[in-house]
Length: 278
Image (cartoon, rainbow, N blue to C red; front, side, top):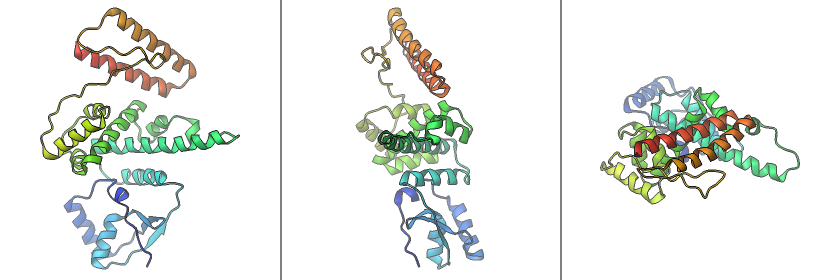
């Protein structure tokens, strides 16, 4: 029998089944056997972890099928897409996995860009035909700004999980309540502060308060900071909006509406945050 490798990241990528669902699956396998093959990639189990656990525990025979992928990142995307189509997930879980899909896709895109720079012929593939956010927004039937926010939320959840897997589980299970905007802001905090937040979530002492948003800068003129504090002079507002308006005009002229919408949403969020400070 082929040796099966268990990869911890793949195993815990999606939430574990609750006790009732697991018991139902176990009863079904005991009665009917394992009808669906377990899916492997280079000997690593990528689909069927619960079935594998039950079958090995009870000595139930099972079959396997091998799939080919170009990279570990492609495997992650396949697992996310496959499992999201099967399970009823909470809003926070859906956000996390859409964001993880986006971040993984961007990593693949970055690798492709590196290869294309070394090639005389440009790559004519899906990564170069439209933006990642635009493609995923169609796949998941959400806006590009939602995908952008999901990426920030997913990044925060994973950074929290690096310090405390338990805290990550509490957030995804809904046992520790967070709104998505709060998590998106947490993603901008320094790593040591995120580590402290993770531990406070784990021990139940986290106080829900909005982290301060980082100082914003004009993309074309990074020396001009986005002012913070309770008062903002009219001249400063004029400088900020003037520079940002110029950038938005360039995006509009380029025809990249997805990037334009993302930039507009970012600017609106900045203004809303400033309004709350006044």
